[in-house]
Image 1 (cartoon, rainbow, N blue to C red):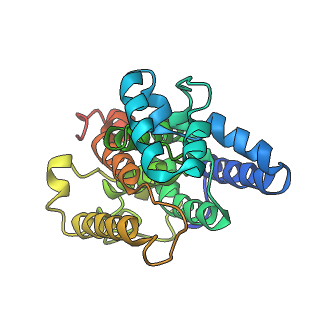
Image 2 (image 1 turned 180 degrees about the vertical axis):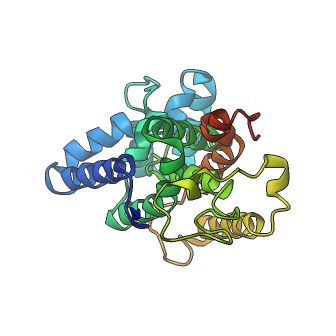
Image 3 (image 1 turned 30 degrees about the horizontal axis):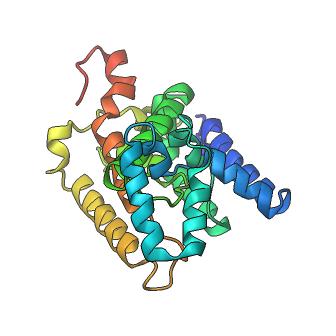
Length: 269
């Protein structure tokens, strides 16, 4: 019997992790501080800069208030992140390939390997990349909606990783699935990743999925609010973006899932 190694990470997940590491390595060791700043200026997501397209007067008012309260140094930083005023349409996705430090990069890589693996095996490479992009953009969208006039850049794949975690919740706790009852470690046909998904209406009552979701929301909220005061991070944590990515992965799962199509069933929303 052919065995499928449980820790055999799909190539699409490895490619994303390699991109994270390579990009951060180039930033860390191959670019000057000025060059790295320019890279962030062009590819990080800055809510206020994006808002210039929709509400330039609101951004101008926010900048005036910010400059008046924070002093000249932070005023210069805010002016820098506004750049030339272009919205940079790619930034709600490109920010997800940038990380604040090696720890940030490593944490996202580990969690993507853990939860992206079952989802990529179920979806396939193309659908998984589409899920990654949609959940990253959803995370940026939620963060923008709550911080439209924030001048701080947002970086990191956490929203997309959260989306993969949420998508995994829809099936990995089911009987025969990787974290469900009756999972056979020796099965090599991939059937564990094709178990029926939990309909969205039942997720909140599923005795395995719901505790995981509740824990995830609690940890993200506590870490987002307390990371700086507790000295766990030097930078604010965009926890709202994580939630945006998670909700997108949870709610849009069926739009990417090929299993119900192969079985001829209705989409398991």
